[in-house]
Amino acid sequence: MGGEGRKPGGMENSRVHVLTLTMDLFGATMEIHPVLIRDVDGATLVDTGMPGQFSQLVEAMNQVGVTLGDVHRVILTHQDVDHIGGLPDLLRERPTNLQVWAHAADRPYIEGEKTLLKANPERTREMLSHMPPAVRSQVEAMFVHLPTGRVNRELMDGEVLPVGGGTRVIHTPGHTPGHLSFFVEAENTLITGDAMLVKEGELQGPNPANTLDMEQATRSLAKLADLPVKMVVCYHGGVYQNNPQARIAQLAVRV
Image 1: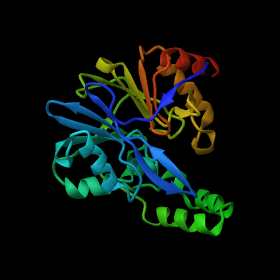
Image 2: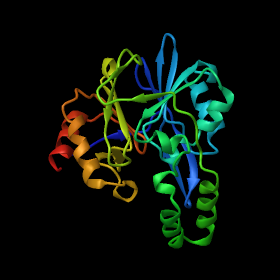
Image 3: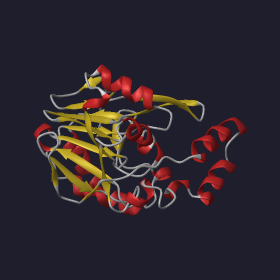
């Protein structure tokens, strides 16, 4: 199937805005895509970018007409550094008026009670041992002070959140134990976090190099296969709209 991915430029439909943040990492430019969901009572931010990207995140929100004060909720798809990196800055700027939601299985890692699963000393040493010195110093700097922040609410599989006219929580473990995807029902939009990615224009399953349990992560795709999806938003790769429902079903069959 010849898929067609495209880079988000801001508003993709009436409620959902796909943001683009960039950074130079490992000698290459990396793009990631937090999502804003707008409601009458304020905005919800899904994932927060890498450490050091906070000013870029705020600017990206401003470009679609959302200020930091408009953001009432942060939903975290999972515990990885590139998804929770902006959380300490957000909580510093909004110490009392910001709700943070995540799955219970990833909560102790987000709150710093446990070390992030992909940032444990053994995994970090193994990763660093294969890197050239310039890249190694950048990675070491990223993992010296790991981001943490409080979680106010634990999300459960199947519940429908009062966000975007109704957003369904889908527990898609494997990438991490508490990985979540979200289906914005009124917009037929699926936010996948790292459960899937878009690479070379095609929607694909999770990245094996960064997935803790690839078998479980692949099985999780079956939970997405029957959704009436018209647009998929992947944190890595951005927007995919070329008959995504059929493509997800095809990926799920491969389990």
